[in-house]
Image 1 (cartoon, helix red, strand yellow):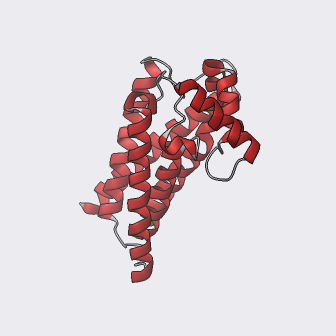
Image 2 (image 1 turned 90 degrees about the vertical axis):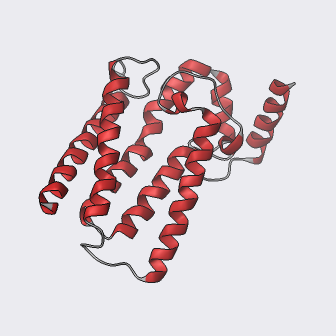
Length: 205
């Protein structure tokens, strides 16, 4: 019974993740089709919401049912993975709270450059990638690892679909932000960072 449930959850989660990744890739390569970001609550919004729900439920269910079935990580790895997972979760929540839930879901909003967005243009993705990597390592389940890798690939590629849309929305303001703040992690040039800081101060006055 448990084996059947595991296989069902894995299949559903894998298919949902495949749909999300396929839609993302189509957005990246096609100048006329956009699956992500949605902009409005159109059909892609509801399809994406459904697919993400099925993917996450399947991933969590697989991790629980198949826990340590592949291998049992050493205690040190377990402790480090838990700490990294908690840190990734905290970063994701902070970033989502700062940007807003609906904007995080791919709907139109304002350009956010404060909070964690001062250090990364995609802090939520950094947090999610951290959670998936550490969670997959901790679970000791090959099926969990496969699903986690799929999610990591999606979050790594997502900015390639988002950035052209964001340039259309915010123009030069977004270009300046890109020059000053790294896509994920890194250190921008001092001149670019100073320019962005001065622009942010000017906008707030």
